[in-house]
Image (cartoon, rainbow, N blue to C red; front, side, top):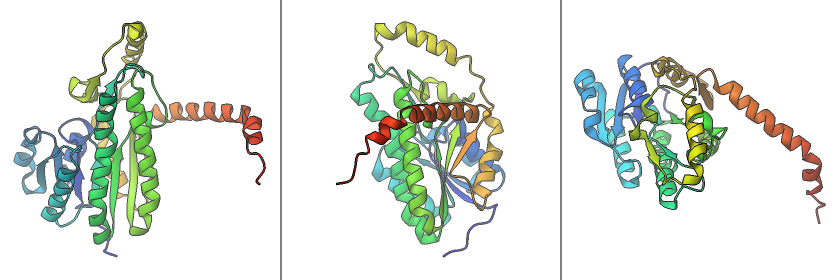
Length: 282
């Protein structure tokens, strides 16, 4: 097995790096001297990075919903730098709408970007990471990968799928020296809530009041400073034994703990019914 890269001088591949966390984390890696293949749907949105970081950055146009382009882009980045130490799936967006409002085309498009896109990147990278003897796959999920909220239920569901895929992946690739970490940010003051990162399902009058109340409460949430996050990401990629999951923010753990306590309470209350349903082996 090839020797693992040290804590500095890593080579990254990042999707969705035009703004938000992807941009912030890419620049944090570049500022400390790492090399980064930065990708975005529109090349002009990341072109300025070349002026600042020169040969340490490779800017590439990438639509993660196009598997052939994903494979070619990952391979181009690997060939350019000679290896990839960190593969970070960050591209994604949210669909705003109740479960009844969501149309099949909107849901399908959401999953194409949030689930199938990251899978395409993973599948393109794995043969290269195995051959070089290791690497680290990171995926940007969310605290709603464990809990749900109304009005963005389909987005939550995409993150639950994202979590399951990465957890299975971690077990499958461990023997190849490949590490997996799911990054789970809470509410942050990024551009994720902007029009560029949101899609809206056709609205129904029946849900207008409910959605208005929900959005009002959502706006009251305390949001973290995204510029405070890079050190956490760099610690994870530098760790000899990184965690499978990493919360970002101070509100995630209490929220998730409460959700799981409620689930356990319900399961325990109904355990006699569950056990009775086991039956007897024939």
